[in-house]
Image (cartoon, rainbow, N blue to C red; front, side):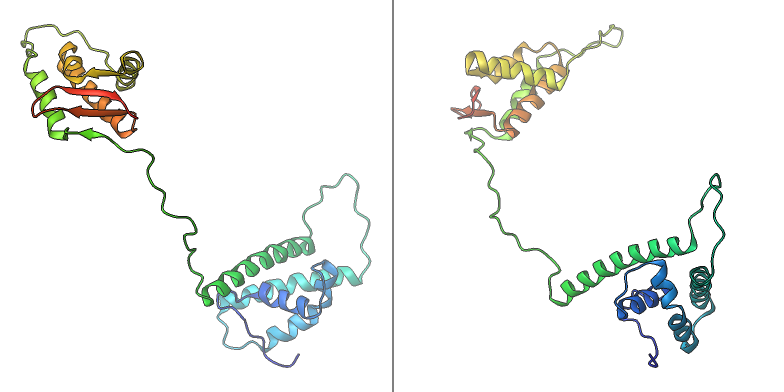
Length: 238
């Protein structure tokens, strides 16, 4: 008990660390009685601390004052509490609660420190790299060919004049995706060029193109083109 107090972990250096060590050295449970039992040892240790900055010293002295209060209550009889009086958290109960929480964090920090010293900073991959399900089939079709089909379809749509009243179009991407999926359910395959030709506006052409790209990304369709600048055929992916 004559050796100066030292902290095992650099991240912990304070009165709670000292209190916890004193209780564990005497193999005591964290209770108000055990706090009272180590009060004298705590005071002896802080009397040996030198060159401690005022802020940290104040923390030690605050806990020391609480320990003295706890010890006095253990040694001296206390008047009975009024039944209707609201009971505030006792200094001993508050210190016990803080110590229990502190021990949990200290234990977790020590476990992390042990893992770091063992070189366990990361977890190795135990499973193989997942492979994408299915294959996107674009037989003879490039993105440029799809874009060219969209461009040709838009050329055939007249641009409205400035004095023409335009009725707002309600064309949504989810609706167009559902429409293409329903075509596939009925026909199993269809001409993308024909679908673009049936569009009534440039906006619908663009939305149709985006819908097809979504279906390709989801691996629900196959797209093929038998020859350069030929018809683009969309079918159910197999």
